[in-house]
Amino acid sequence: MRGPRDDSLGSVAVSRLQVVSGKGGTGKTTVAAALALALAREGRRTLLVEVEGRQGIAQLFGAEALPYEERKIAVAPGGGGEVYALAIDAERALLDYLQMFYKLGSAGRALKKLGAIDFATTIAPGLRDVLLTGKACEAVRRKDKAGRFAYDHVIMDAPPTGRITRFLNVNDEVAGLARFGPIHNQAQAVMKVLKSPETAVHLVTLLEEMPVQETADGIAELQEAGLPVGRVVVNMVRPHHLDEDALRAAAGERRAEVARALSRAGLGGARRGGLAERLVDPLITQAAEHASRVELERAQRTVLEGLDVPTYELPLLGAGMDLAGLYELATELRKQAGDE
Image 1: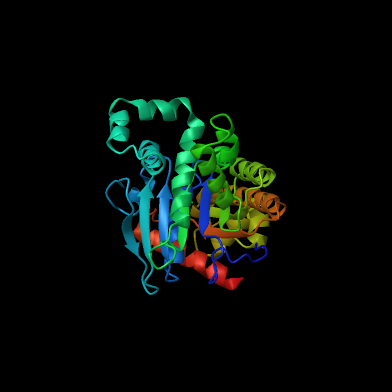
Image 2: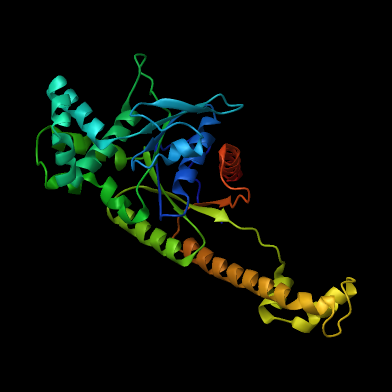
């Protein structure tokens, strides 16, 4: 299933800030990491940003816990690109903000020791979102002395789908905090990036009813807020082991036919109590479960097609997720982008 090309991962990637969200358990952190590697393998310098404090990125790359600094965690083979990572801490981001706009320096550090920073971000959760998104957008806009962007792409491992629109729509969050001044101006600058063609918000889902419904709701909320929807990434797609005829047979529980086929294969006679007889029920049960799952997945694909959003699909890796698995998923993302 493919939608119209927008080059958000192709050889001419447009979106410099790529936000990855998804219902809990869909593997959004894994997809964000694979996306960063896929872009780096095109020779680009990418920054992978974490905003939830879970250290999921460090775990995926087998690295130590990420500090509040940009650290190189991977080099893409072939293309020569690099992946840097940053775990954004709201308190540290607020200290940066106070230094940037108010030159507080050591006074800001004193506020942290007194607990004022934590107090401020706790009683004003909107401020926390402004700080987290603001730090990511600063990395998008940052340039070196030669006027080149410090990073070709910034990939954000963002909050889950149910919170993503509120998290990104910092204009609403700031409305109750400041209608003018540095905080207001900072929020306006952030929104200028978030609602521009520089940004794409990708939603990760599984072919299951609840994640797909949450994805549909998330897309509607993002579009209503004027935030740019990128792609739906269907993650952990399982292979189909049966052809159409076999699926129909499994769904119809054609027990006698299966028993005869086993007998012809030399697995004992079809008599009652034979090996074929003992194999029939478990095989039919497994086949029926597989057929049922295939039917449910097809129904969810139909729902996704109706969303009119371009889609990628990533396979379920049977051996679990490690660095090799991330590179495999990154290769698959690049392949699907190149096929469009």
